[in-house]
Amino acid sequence: MKYLQMIKRLRWSILVAFAFGCGTVMADATPPAVTMDWTDPSAFSEVRQNVCRNGVKPEEWLTELARHLQRRGSSMIAAGQHLAVTLTDIRRAGACEPWRGPQWGDVRVIKNIYSPRIDLHYTLTTADGKLVRSGEATLRDAAFLSRSTPGRDDPLRFEKRMLDDWMRREFKPG
Image 1 (cartoon, rainbow, N blue to C red):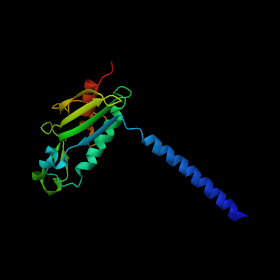
Image 2: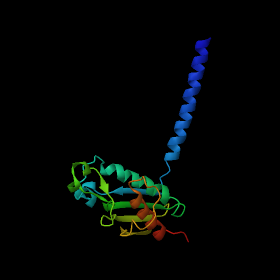
Image 3: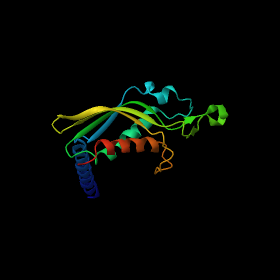
Image 4: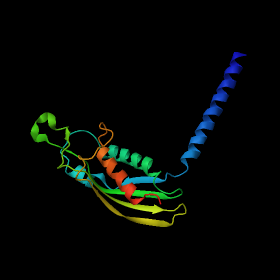
């Protein structure tokens, strides 16, 4: 008797898991309003000029920037539109200064002379694929330390703020 109850519970658990799994798949079938990709990271200024020894791979911070852009950008473009952004070059805020000593090889020093830069290409389309607008953007923030930035613990806070500022300027509602 207990064996039959276990089987029934197991079947019920499988049905519930399947139902939630299908719901997730169906929800993911809708393409996101904003997507971001990038060209070859090894050609980026950040990678070519970086003397930091830390093991952070470009794909890790690029993926985080893509998530941020997708989260923020979804509310900035009109419903039914799709924004595709391709990063073509990036230089993150700060730099390593290994000449300070061996323990400084992994420390990113943030100074005004190490300002962030992002070059990108974007395409905004309607739901049926018609081009609304496309273009290139060169994002620079020479005064990045003079402005308040939330998230002092976020190593990408300056780059995220530049992307937010660009989206507000380029895709403001109305």
